[in-house]
Image (cartoon, rainbow, N blue to C red; front, side, top):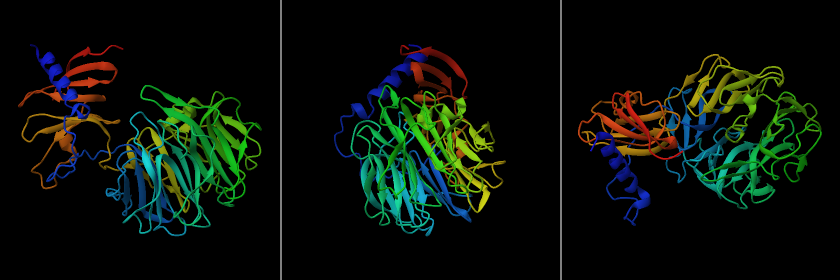
Length: 474
């Protein structure tokens, strides 16, 4: 039997031996076994990042599968502060403006890829991330949390709900007692959740919210429906009005992102997924709108992006985290790609007391800039998402698998180095994503990886492909 066919047989054996075919019906926790970190500390998908105005040292990062991380030294190092909690998929993080020790976390990444993990509600820390309370329990994703600039007891959360099915726990939620209790203040239907919520910082009684009808299936992604829309409240969230016409697009909408300029409360921007969608701008507090930009760069993969950040010192400057990092300096009339700290960007935070200090979250992790985005420093933290894992028979054995946006990697299970397993021990990796890899026994240099679209690739550990053939149709 040829090497390729022997490896195919091994690959099938690994698949059949997976959790779905396990004969062990007992607990997944085995006595005497403890998890230890292997790496690689190269970054991974992050969803939101926030700093503290005027404090160049402290940042919080929410990640797609790695919990919540904190830096207390200006990004030189990061510490996981959420490992003791029962959820690792995080969609949002916010710090109270009046007391920076109060931190809120919304679980469940709201950029709903096919491998998204569900959340289980909202968490609160009163001691800067040292300990956490689970203050609201619900199944689903929470992509935005905002704290009132005037009252730390008032918090709003954009709850998308479960992306996989219907349910009542979706819409805009409000707490007026510092997170102890939560009330659903904007609800459309069991298929529609909230994609965004934003204050008018000059008058926190005025809020805008985006509602998004969406569903993630194993075989499909549906973004848009009659439930989607842009809403406004003028009484602190007690009542909401759906904004229609007056320059807003007709027809079915999808995901909506919205922000109000801190320097001019009449200036409101909305990113709207629609047939005639793109960037919309209001110069009168939402009464009327202009379709200011329909650049394809603002509209691509709207379900995965559709976020924006207005410079807190200039209402004409807006950042759009997208496949590329996009930016306007003329109120949206033109949008250009600018220097970036990662790729597939999801969030930008700007210090209102020093707008040259910027943080961004992306599929690469978190990056910081001290010069307005001219240069970036990307953090190396272990938050990568493995699609699947396998091991070989070396001593020490090697662990291999495919990472979200970091290719297929292999690294040692142990190391004699005083610092433990280093990032360099994981090697450069193969430059594509696969779903499962297996290697020959002993010191064999041959491996077989199953790629997307059913393609099998045979390789040597030197990373040089030696054969490729289609294994599944399509």
